[in-house]
Length: 464
Image (cartoon, rainbow, N blue to C red; front, side):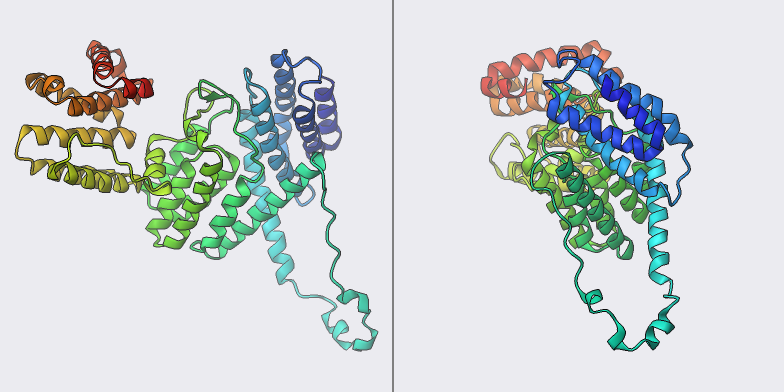
């Protein structure tokens, strides 16, 4: 509580610089003294409310501040510090969440202005000739002081963990991100900038946020953020999409959708080496924190959308597992091959082409059994591409055929795949889907849950 008052007093006294110091103080106390602090750790709501109170009281200051040469660096530092602040509180507080969105929106706008101002100042300094160059040229070299040729002393780095160490890492991260952005501005196809960006943006991550049933207390990106990426992609404004998605990725460290948009946009520009850099950077991150794929923001929105999860499975992790097709004959092999190719197309944003590929395969089927297997492959593709309602329509259409041929009795392997595909599609229906309220859908879930328990107990325990 006292720390909250101190943070607010610091902000009122020194404005942005003071607020930056105040939030870093709260971050340090939460990270190192969470168990020993007051109020006691079990009074989590009181602690989080104190932090929320500081953010609420300072939001108007952020909205009204005018970015200038005197505060641009402090605004950037505050933005970096806020990321760390949210990360630590998200890890320590397991029941209550920071109300950070209202504070974050104006700060991100101010940070973009500050980044631009500093960039312009730097470019101006680089292009401004030295006013004393002529006089300097006239001075004999013997009069030039020798020490000026010596290298600048290396900065002293902290050797122990603590606030100074965290500040050094944060500063290093900022410099790397600035460098990556400068390289990207010079050549948007330069693969090195994307490797540096991914190393830097996750540099402060030491653990995933705490979660209850996969749901964390982190606020999700705004709807505007989600929609803007789709809009830029559909309008084929790929360079703007790349720059905006890279900024969003460093603002929302656990949201992985921007990675897919960047990779796909680079692919459209023919920058294959840059695509490989994006993929390699994300693959390294996932190797350290594979559980991130299962986590959600506060409210249930996933860190990784279905289309992005498909892209990660098919491109980033390059998994060879494409699922069974219910048989080992030539048709099964053909379905497996075509389904794998369709998933790759869908992962690259070419869902219509992927669907066409499977439709063509199904049109060549010579019997109902093969048509059934092709339809299951189409349903699997739709579910993984984020089109769960389309997948449900497909599997509902297969019910009569399965009943007519007594599939569970005569071909239990294909029946198991059928039930697994149905349940997977139903589990991915969005909460707002009108299908969830239909009696037919509820009956379908019950029927195939019972079926898969009868047919394959191990699989049932894994997916139920």
